[in-house]
Length: 113
Length: 114
Image (cartoon, rainbow over all chains, first blue to last red; front, side, top):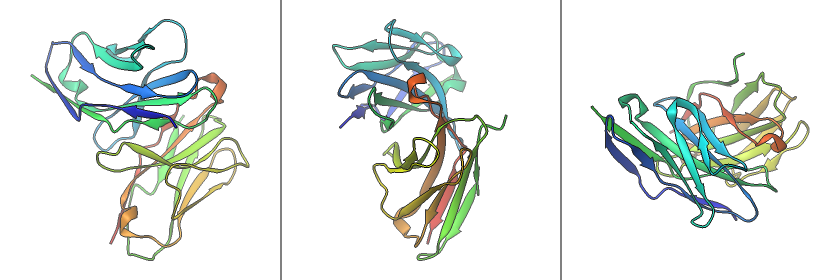
């Protein structure tokens, strides 16, 4: 069975500082990895995905994520955080044989001015 | 292009009542999904439909039924609501898995069961 772990319930960062939201996964076969963001009272919005190729994936709103196969990680990063980045972030994984996404428990990002 | 739409936005039910949550997408996607979101538990898949005419159970299907009415619409039914079904329900759709399987989500339905 596939699984995703987001070890931090909340990440606090000052505006302008770099941010990292951590994600590790377990899956049989090749992983398809995703990051989604959820703003209050809204549905999830797709940020970026890793399917194959370059380990550094660039996505929406200046976010990027690094795929590390040996550490089974897919951490979300941004060089300079904005207050408007404050939201709930979800990592998800799907294997190449399946049709279902498995989500992590979510990490709340708080960016303070 | 409205994307994924869900109705109603909010609903209060009494224990034992039934209701149907509606979902529609206008992106010509093949696959559709129903999730529930509970605090600290992320999203859990209830049912999904890989293509028109097929439905499959997800992680937490008990107490729910689904209907893939056509390619656009995928409904979720609670036959006899229980307080444990108080949650936020999200519908999602995606194109063929071979295209990466990115899922696009609706705005959600908040359900309170008393």
